[in-house]
Image (tube, rainbow, N blue to C red; front, top):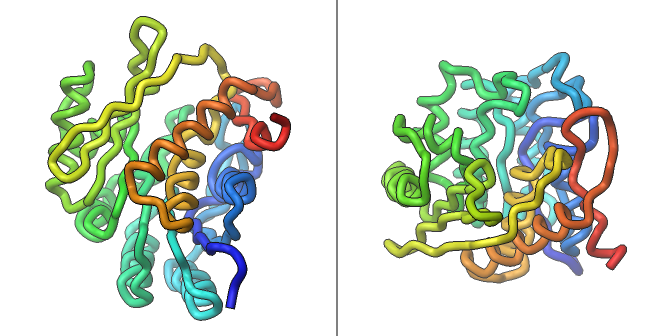
Amino acid sequence: MKDIPTVLTIAGSDSGGGAGIQADLKTFLALNVFGYTAVTSVTAQNTMGIYGIYELPGNFVYRQIEAAAQDTGIDAAKTGMLSNTDIVVNVAKAVRYFKIKNLVVDPVIRAKDGSSLLKDDALETFVAEIVPLALVITPNIHEAEILTGAEVKSVNDMEQSAEKISKLGAEVVVVKGGHLPKDGKVVDVGYINGKFEYLEYPYIETRNTHGIGCTLSAGIAANLAKGYDALTSIRFARDYVQGALQNELKVGRGWGPLNHGWIWQK
């Protein structure tokens, strides 16, 4: 019995509060869904960088997912930082065993400061085990390059990457264009049912972007849990992210977090 949709985030903890589990829970609250968590890794970080990572055992990550699934059930889920092969394998096993639908995969591979968030020897397993389970996958430009092995320098390249990634098994692909602003605009390229969709937004010049990928994927999962279709869920989530960028907060001396609470302030 429940009065609200339930969404599970399977991701790392950010002690700086801007990304990972913390960003996901803020997004869930803002979009009026209830958030469960399965913590994969604990990081020591702030707006200036990551100073340490402690990875949890894969079987304990599985137990966290099991606890959420066996209580109220899970209407949607998202993955973020999965760290290593052990965690990847256990997350995939849990998603399959508990028949978790509406899975949004944020392929977190490297942090802004260059820190590795998915070990190199885990990438092949991630592609084989996690990507085919995704209803939606949300790579940025750099992640798309790693997943496809091809450079992404234009919208046309983004289209080709989206199509290639769909062939890895993900049902819907969104290649984010935040690292390729042009003429004051950003274009995200979606690939759904063999068709391209384009999400165009004004480019916001700001350093307060920490957690933007986590927030978008969490927002998509939240909207899927409410019963929206994939494209509507993506558009609503992207609108929320845009508002968080436009109504920026200034926190810290480095890459500051998004303003997840802007929706209440407005």
